[in-house]
Image (cartoon, rainbow, N blue to C red; front, side, top):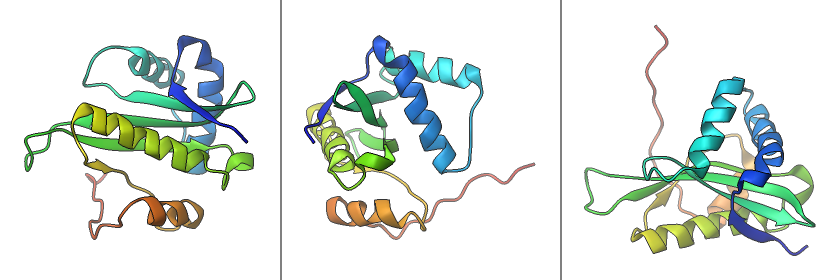
Length: 149
């Protein structure tokens, strides 16, 4: 299946929202309508502090997305790239959509002047981790976050 990777456009809103809803559902969460609106606007904005979005398109339909962000790092002079969200529709998994999206983020990072790209996933996300083990390097770091108060 030929897949095109391209930046998100304003015309993609409904399909992007469907994909992101499915992604959030995979992780057992959801967000408010306000977050959908704000995130979509930020993805299309020109503020360098905001996330960017690339989409995978097959047969004129969005079949995948990735959100990524460049940010400073205290241990480096160049920015690093955080790939926050990666999603491919269930029927396209195993066809190269996820790999193409990650490689497109790698290319964006190279263009931005950084080779450092990182992402997180759940330890039991075994299907995705098969790809990640081929295209990335597992680090020994564990994620912690502020406890609910």
